[in-house]
Image 1 (cartoon, rainbow over the protein chains, first blue to last red):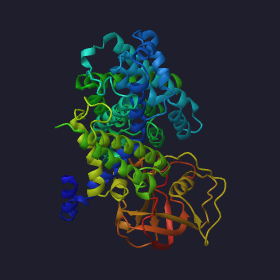
Image 2 (cartoon, chains in turn red, brown):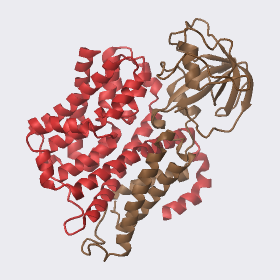
Image 3 (cartoon, rainbow over the protein chains, first blue to last red):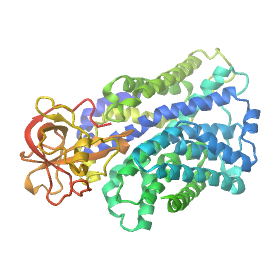
Length: 306
Length: 244
């Protein structure tokens, strides 16, 4: 409250600084990423709250069992029908692991959901007219990324890397109390980390001009690295990244496929969200693993199909 | 950072809900996201308002529901950061992306975008055809039948400086947005036949397409297409600042 009043009082005094074009552009992009993500984040925490309140943990453990050979591919397929952006799937995966689902399966779901759901695939088809192979390649490479990361985690992952979250609203409450309490807590938690990610992504968009990034697209291996890095830095919603990729015509289709496969599974705002929901020890291992897996999957599928 | 007690959580949620509902109901959302997202923003705002009201009720009447948990339900300190977008909206009052953001992308036209039908031009209004910047740039560069030839066209955009402004011209630019301003792509035409204009002024220009020397219709170009201005009218910034 005090901050709000101070802000209103200080506005005229800070006017020249606040009207600077770079700050204005940063503010617009920052607010855009945050506002754009809100409906998806709210959908995610509502699903998360509903899972906590209405789905018994025994059922979750049975649906996502600790048998990775079955659970990881099944969870990846389940992700394909969850119509959301990446921001929504993180709290859902966090809730699933907190309730006893196998982490490998929850992560496979978390990676698959934003990359291969119908909305994203249709957007890709619209952005690349006459190139249905691009849609197929994206589907295959993203699915492979989710499954491989799930298997790697099942084989090498350790549970102590995961932040153990206490269930905040415990027994004795009504289901409505559990639902509202969980959804509220997950929104405040993931939302705060989403802001961290949007601040960074907007700053990078202002500081690193797209024209510089695209100007160094001469050699193929460099182009692939540049677009993979761009996918991490821009943090574009998975439902919009196909249109940006379509406009980057200086790059080969394979390099653009790398952009489309990396973006939904690892970017600045997702790393912040993962840090918040699963802990720092998790994020520093998960981000490089996912990045490398996504790049390699996209290269193999691109070399095979495109 | 200190965690939030339930009263602080409730205030934060209700403030966020109020902003989202406002963005969902008014044109204030359009500098940030495409218009089609507004119902989703409204719905998200209503859900947050319900969650905030629930937290407020628990704070004011701890006896309701579960007495033991009341007053001990803290949210992590990182949640305070959710105030940052609210403060930014209030303090900076971000305007739609303008010439600064366009300059970061360079003036090279993006590749032909989908959804453009080169078949026929719309009916003229008051002697000129209203075209979106996306459609003008697409037709000017990629239409082998040069449907823009001998057609009077009306374009709307803002003034951006030319990379090389020795000639005294300027770019008329508009952003195309798919989801939000983070994925905005700048679309520009080079205006000729008009004097200097202040940067970021919104203009409505009636004029004609002129082929650029050395550009073969149907192929990409590294420079924006030309637009010969015949009548230039400064206008207010449109309610929809981007093409969606």
